[in-house]
Image (cartoon, rainbow, N blue to C red; front, side, top):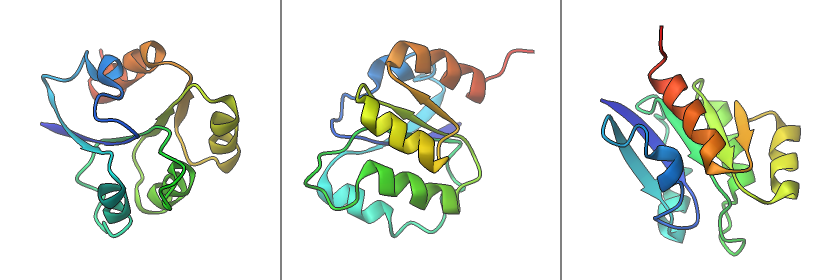
Length: 120
């Protein structure tokens, strides 16, 4: 079974984007301040096949943008970002940390499905 790490602001985030693969993957969501801070201590991200980043509450020190940089330094697989905030997406695009950046979940869903389970 494939593993997806999802870092975002709410447990229900990205349910639509993950719905095409939810029965074929293990989804690990990190949404609370303590869970998100713990991610920075993970040395082995190789257990994941995909990382999804969404906007995180601005009061949490480890912002989604800094996490994207952290993940890219330690993870060679696909990292995607999903969020409606244009400024946030622009920043992530400028850092070059993400494989793809989406404004909506529906567009991300097809990419996630094809990335994890490509059709031949």
